[in-house]
Length: 405
Image (tube, one colour):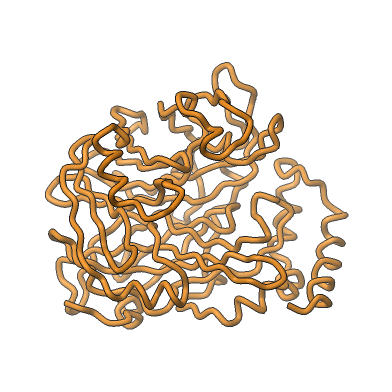
């Protein structure tokens, strides 16, 4: 990468950085000025990489869920007030004629200078224009990390007592009968909560009992043994999770409360080519019905992929993809998007959580559009915002690498 190009960008960015405070909660409009500044975007050094990545949709056609109307102060008993700076990885859902958005907050914990530790999950109602119109509600999940040793997982300063409702990430929501099923992670394990119409927790499942740990260990591909990005769907009135599409194998877990009842595994040769071009296919949105053309009784899930690029430093580029699979056991994959549906843009920011080593598109939620001709996908944008984008069924069909029905 041309050093003059990098220096030019940094000089432009510094002129903006010098003019604004880094206190995000007090200077939202100033952050927007930087975020939306075309001069900064056009001169961003990562454009050299991005121009060579194809994308069916354009990020310019996506819509922000603006952070102005999301939670500003989080109050948890016996814990200092928390002031979020980032609101991202939102999962949208239609529930009782309302639009709800479940989203993740984050901020840098002042006493340890770490991100993630005060991350929490909230919900808000949206209007037809996808603007927040209700009070923001903290989802009071009872998972608590203080019972396991964080030193062995991520932080190197021993056991840390984190109160309930914190250290939680990446909500994904679906409907099951009259309840909302919320799946989330602490970055290392996956949990599920059942919510009532008031968004109160009425039941919770921890899948990491002794029997499940053994079963999951036989499936695990990642070396670090982390469990993230399980994508949910309902079949035969039972909760199922897409565990992964890796090494040409599609793995689906059939659940019974907190136990793995059955495992469905099918071969998918389409995964290798995608992995080579754009990175491995990782979990994303819950799966919704897809019935278009020759695809009948199928489901679709919108996924994310990550590929590493080596320039003068390491850069990770996240893109959005999708695949279609049969809505019956063993849930065979019948088509994979041949080209990323969406790629990120260059993102100037004053918020260091949005690392300059990562350009992120992270799909988390999906609904059918009002005309029943396509989908609206909610996705995390550079670990800072939630955005929405619409895609038509016809585009999804046309972009399939092939189908193997």
